Length: 114
Length: 110
Image 1 (tube, rainbow over the protein chains, first blue to last red):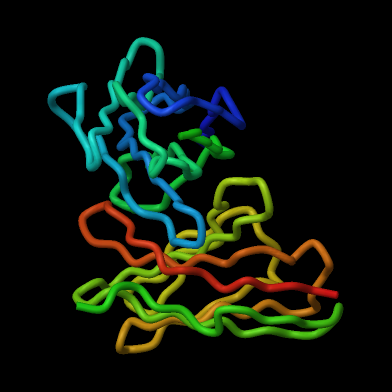
Image 2 (tube, one colour; image 1 turned 60 degrees about the horizontal axis):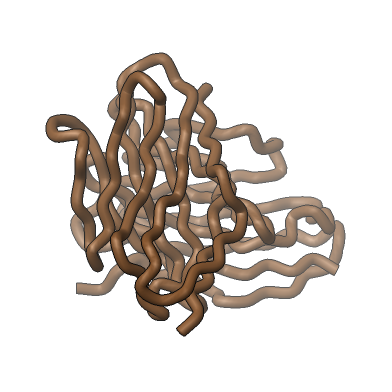
């Protein structure tokens, strides 16, 4: 069975600071990788995804993530955060088995101060 | 195009009772998955329905059961509620390995 580990439970940044949220997964086979975001009071939304191809994927709102297969990692980055990025971020993995079920990490709560 | 909808939004039940939560998938989606999100945790997979059959199941006891109807909508039933069942229950519908989540049902067991 696969598992996902997110390195930080809480991150506090000032506006314009750079962001990197760590995510590692354990699974020996081919995986699809996702980052979801949950803004306060809203439902989970897909930020970006990796299925195959270029390991650097770009998502919405200026976020990007890099898949490093040798490190089993899929870290999320943003060069300059905004107050509106305050949210909880979840990394998730789907074993590429034809089913779409997701295994999530515990999440990272990002607080951006103005 | 309506997204994934869930009802009710909030629910309070007593230990030992039974509860039914409902989900309507996004238009065109035929697969529905249910997740439990406890406070401070990521969502945990409960089960997935496709063509009215349970296709995959996570590590949840038999007290958790479900159903999918011909119109692809789905129900999650939990029997003999425990305090530990208090959580946000999320429904997701999927197409091409990408899941779209509903707003969830907040269940409180007292």
